[in-house]
Image (cartoon, rainbow, N blue to C red; front, side, top):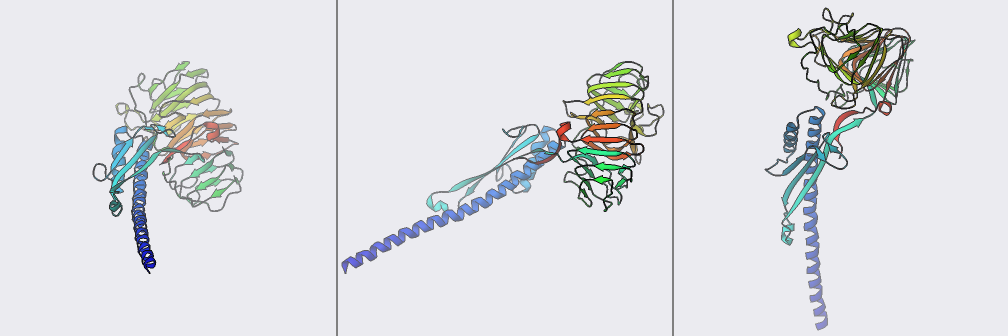
Length: 428
């Protein structure tokens, strides 16, 4: 009987010990669940902050505006720096995978009091979350039409439009935003249209989709590009409207540049700002390696918000921004450094007169290659010739029209052009 009594006492001790162990595990499980929940919240805050920072980078905001934007967003998600959390912003980043000024690193930390584990002497835990936001690459679209609502935003009458290793995005909500005549052809990886027509034209080769929502970054994938500052004019207004020389240097050309003398003109590498008047080329051989043309209005001192097609402008067309006429031999490549690297033609989005739509005319009777992007979100391109026009994307324009002849336009995607469209996103 004594032996049985001893066994019962031993069992009680074992049960008590087991209960303590079970209670300890239960305490840890409860607090661990709370920690994991709080960590998910911290990660959401870090992601939101990194995305806010990426948006500021995308918009080319000054470095001093990036950290406040991040802190506002993390606070909105429940983690306020210096109050209930420590939020660390590193810009430019030193991340091994995403270094430099295109990225923002955000770290969120908070100390938590343990509700039950403190019984076991574990009084607090620290949660930590990290995210890196920046400019990711969007490789699929190399031709974007920004027209919001009009029909025939993309118009091919009797020529050919081809994109290489990329697609076409048409943002117009018009019922006939894309119009291809029976003698026209579009050959692309895909054609995506916000509007219509809902029936695919026989002239469109490849996948075709209508009712496509606008991209998350909006209709303009290059909206982060900033208009350069316009400085003092090179000479008097209109001095280069009928240029007869053989060489030009970067600078501000008030009244534009016009070359019609039939000789050869070489543009030195750099940026050429056309402040009113545009660029007019006809019958000449024009060479420019490493150049970017920025087209804008005339400075206030020379007429203010003047029409591109102002009287005495270099172009013969009304409201013309850039005009390349027949019998012009072009050899243009874009700048490879600076904020507009890879862009050959940049049209100031704010230029022009209210209610006036501007058009860039690319007419040529010989094969032409513009080796660089074309950015004219509020201006159209009209092409008319019997030759091949190659554009090394991206091309972002309000409208694109191939009007007559057997014009062939080829837009090269990232594999050929090397230029990747960017959008703000979480990269780590």
